[in-house]
Image (cartoon, rainbow, N blue to C red):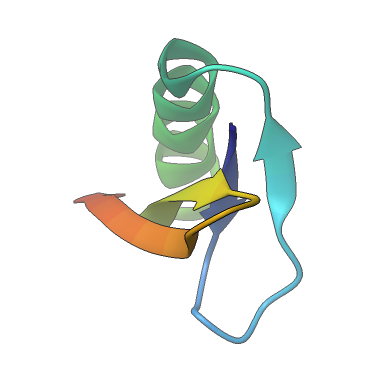
Length: 55
């Protein structure tokens, strides 16, 4: 299982190994660009699931 950051559901993802890393990188992107970032959990067996929106 891994996590992905996306600025929009249709954007190319940024992969992260842990949820903590995803949250940290999302906060940095929010501060830098000023818009919300979506965090998805990706499981090879069940697919992807939207976990939260940082913004």
